[in-house]
Every structure is written in C-alpha cells, then in structure tokens.
Length: 461
Image 1 (cartoon, rainbow, N blue to C red):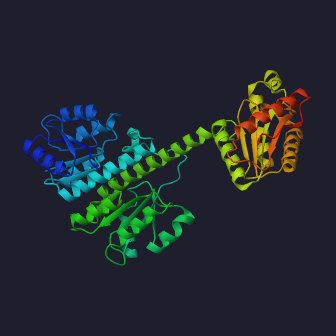
Image 2 (image 1 turned 135 degrees about the horizontal axis):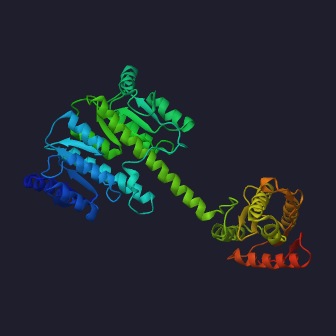
Image 3 (image 1 turned 90 degrees about the vertical axis):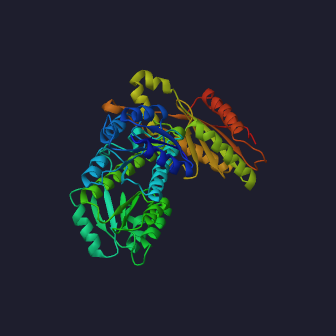
C-alpha cells in the first residue's frame, strides 16, 4: 500500500526504530521531535497517518491530537498514539481527543502495521468515493448525523446468547444506538429484508474458532451489509496476529473483551461516526450523479443524458431490425404564462406537464426536458402507427385539464405542439441525433400550422 507516515516522538532512538520497521513495509517517513514540529509537518506534508507519542517536550500528545482534529487541513489524518504510559485513563484521554488507536510501547509490529493498513485503506476508500480528492475533514471526527438519519442500530452476534446479553448490559446507556442480539443465521437471512444495522459486533469464535471472521467476510461481500461497520471482539490474551488478520480482512475495529466499558464504547462510537459520515458521502455522490443527468425542476432526464441514450436506442433498433420513434414537444405560447402570472407559475406548469407526460408513457420510453419548455420523447420498438397514437395521447394529456397555479392564483390551460419522426427498418450505424433534427423540423411545421397538433416529419433513417 505504501504512503507517508509522520513519526512524532522526542526520543531519537524511538523514531529510528519506527522508521526502520516502516521502511521494511515500504512506507516513507517524516520525523518530528516536538509537538509544534509535528503539527507543522502534518499541515505542510499531509501524511497518510501519524504515529504520536504523548510525552513531548513542548506540547503533550493529547493536545497535539486535539489540534490536529480541530484543523480542517489535518482533521482527517489517521492518528495512532504510541505511548510508554500503560494506563487505562491515558488510553481513554487519547481516544477522547480523537486518536484512532492507542498502543503501548514497544508497539507490536504486526498489529501496528495492520492498523496502519486498515486506517489508510479506509481513508483512501473515502477519497475514491469523493472522486479522488482527499476525504472531507469531517470523515474522522464527523458531526452528529442530520435529523433525517434514522436511529443508529448495532447487532451483537456472540457464541452464546448470555454473552451477547452481558455485552448489551455493559454498553447500555454508553452509546447513542439501539442494540439487537442475533445469531449468524438470523443476520445473514434478515439483513436484506429489514436493512443492515450501522454496526455489527461479532465475537471472533462462534460455533467454531474463526467463525466470527468468516461471518464478517460474508457480510462484507453482500450488498445489503457491506457498508456496515463490522467490529470483531477477541478474547483477552488473543494473539496479535489474530487481531491483525481481522483488520486485514476488513474489520473496522478490533476489540478485546477485557477492555474497560468506556473504552469499548468510545471505539464503537468512533466507528458509528465514520459509518454515518460514509453514508452521507455516498448519498452526496448519488445525488450528484442524479443531478448530472436530471433536470432539477421536473425530475426528468436532461439533454446530457437523453442524447447518448437516444443513440443507444437507435443502435439497438438497427441490431434488432425493429423501429423506433422520436418526438419533440414544445409548449404553446409558454412565454405568455411567465409574462402574465410570473415564473413561479411557469415552473408549476412545467412540473405538471412533465408529470402528465411521464404518466402517459411506457416504463421503457425515454422522456427528457431538453430546453426551457421543450421535451424529448423516444419510443423504442415502436411502429409509425403506435408512435402517432402515442403522440396524440400525449397532446390530449396536456390539453385535457387546466393547470392549477401556485398560491391559489387560479388556473391556466396549456397546449403542446409535437413533431414526430418514426423509423422502421433502422439501418446499421443509425444515430438518434438526425432523428431529433427531423423531429425539430416537424415541430416547427406544427407551430406554423396553428399549434396544438402533431406533425409527422420525413423518416430520418
């Protein structure tokens, strides 16, 4: 995977030892002996992760961590605290300050490298989702979810039901979520039906040793559950190789069952924030993709989507030897609506006309708004007779009832002119754009001949 790791430690020997270990794993390193220098390098170099000692000569490591999280330029950088202080309260303080993990010196090399791989992989995945940019600084320390997010849920899967119930009692009231208990079979069968929880907490050994890791791999492979944060609970004294394996297999967090309840809750709460931040990022990407191909006013496809899809319809017609038809529809005297009742009324008319057109078409037909008051319709596998009947159906759907205006300002009747071109026996290499041009000429003829009518143009195939 590689990357650059910033080592912040006031002892040169410690920095050198870490540098050698990281170099063997193909990581480049930066080094700082003070907290101030560490903050400067973090801002200037934007490393992939930071290994941070707590005992620094100028600024204590917890304050450095808080400063990193408070700065938008560094808030998303993973931080692993590596300290000689083997004290539970120190670990809690580091986690509260935003550290992703806290390890005691000398840090276990296998587990340290696995944790680095896991954190960097998660950060890069978030960046890939954001289009190659660094993930939003809020990724690591996200704000609380929006009020539109549902209540958070965690499912506990343990070897014995009483173990899961004890876990739930221990964590009750410490986490802002509801906790369910389920078996392996219930989880695999029910996630697709009822939706996945935000978190899974799975004991490493279920019916057989390693069953928890196998269940995690199964959950990560399924569309319904792959975005849940899956956490593995190991027994006290478990080998570091097992924890490293869990992280490399995709565990969001690895916990031990002898951790203090507050530390377990802090680590799970951090995973919940990351998971919710990932959900928001995916929703933002989906919304952006929709906006790229849809008209924000009517919700119909836009020109950017419609013309390439029309070419695909034409190519498909050429392959099958079946016809297709193209219509251009333009609202008659639409400018008068805007001039008389205002643009809000004009928008209401466009939205209602779009709805009527959509309701009148088949599921596989293409409907797009390609101009101010101009719409494009494509009918795959349509004969000329079917296309003419559909065009009349659309014209009548628009004309039949007046459109109510917003604010109780009355209603307005609108009509539509339609230019239609149908192609039967489409030749190889046919494209949709010449059909649009032919339909446009037919539309101009319909306008010139009195409006509110369908005019059939010359076949463009």
